[in-house]
Amino acid sequence: MSMMHDMAHAADDYRYGIRHNLAQFSHQLVQVFFVGLAIGMFRTVVPALAETEFGVARGSFMMLMAFVTAFGFVKGAMNFVAGRLSERIGRKQVLLIGWLAALPIPFMILYAPTWSWIVAATVLLGVNQGLAWSMTQTSKLDLTTADQRGFTIGLNEFSGYFGVAVAGIVTGYLATAYGAREGLMIFGLTVVALAGLLTLLWVKDTLPWAYAEGKKHAAGLMRGPKPRYPAHISATPTTWEVFTLMSWRDVRLASISQAGLVEKFVDALVWVFFPVYLYQQGLSLAGIGWVVGVYGFVWGISQFITGHLSDRLGRKLPIVAGMWLCGAGVALVLAGEGELWWSFAAAVMGFGMALLYPTLSAAVSDIAHPNWRGSAIGIYRFWRDTGYGIGALLLGAVAALAGGIEAGFWFTAAAMFVSGLIVLLACEETHPRLNPARD
Image 1 (cartoon, rainbow, N blue to C red):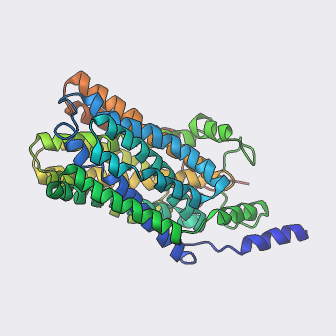
Image 2 (cartoon, rainbow, N blue to C red; image 1 turned 135 degrees about the horizontal axis):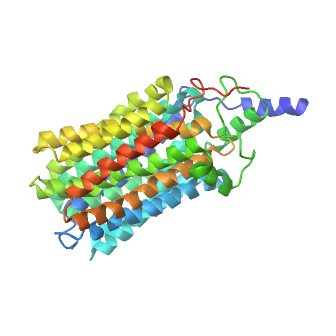
Image 3 (cartoon, helix red, strand yellow; image 1 turned 180 degrees about the vertical axis):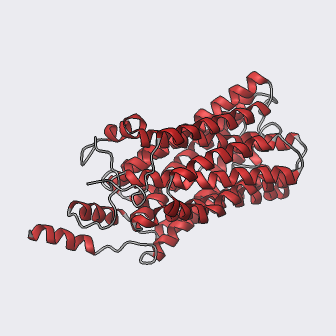
């Protein structure tokens, strides 16, 4: 009995909740903002100037999509590694490795003689994003309580996508002022150097919080409604066990994983085809930065509300509504023209994303046990970001076969509708308060 008491006592040294851990929580928010800035610098200038600046032949859609394909597969793999690695060496180390990987990127853009250098730079970006973004999310979840999960992920993604939007706009102006390569170099180097420095100086490792929570679970000290944990998995599962559970053995987790994969088709579309489409319609670099920025801002800012909303309303409804709304926004791009119309379509897409995005992650953490939550989130994020790669390949192929970018928009809208339907039919509510496990 005294051993149980000691374990409980050790676990009591760690306090959970945003208020108790505000300083560390804030540092992690700043980190994910920088992670968003790093990917955002590839969003406006690089796709729009692929042809004129980096030598991609006009109409070679597969070539244009190559850098997002590379990014998606690398980032997907890194998410997988990050979750497992952080359970071994700690969250802070993994974050630091993520920033080290990004260091060559600004120089590669500056000196890139061909498009393949840009593809190589996005491989490093994939390593950076997979390691660093995963860690900001995992660290925040370590520090917070179960009923703050939706809000926590909402805040995390708000800060990250706010960074993406800001970078898209700022680099649009910098490229106009200093030239495409120089503008991206100045921006990229500043971001990576600052972020790495802040990690070294101020970020704490949150792994002890996760350990303490696992001990509390083991000692039966957790209060509140019981989540519907999957029955068919061992207490300390292997990576393969968690992988098969997330991918097909648990119908709820599998339907969440496929939704994560398909929603990345929208992001691949917005990343590459949207700027190119707008550029072809005669919009300026700064104008493209703003229209695509609207998508990022609406997505980012709305997650303040939507993450919290899913803690109240449950996960299933916002996911399905978000998938369908997002698909509708994609179709709307082609339904009208002019900067105002495209901004409206981008806002609809962004709001759909805000509904589904933090909610999918929260749904995974609802029913993943703390012992393997890091791995579960890593594997969900593996499937989700592999969606960039699969989406980019499919979009490139569809556009090539149809002979135009517009086909990519229709394909994405249809995929989002079908994927939302799968969640509606196959997934039950995961929120423990709204659908607790029966003893």
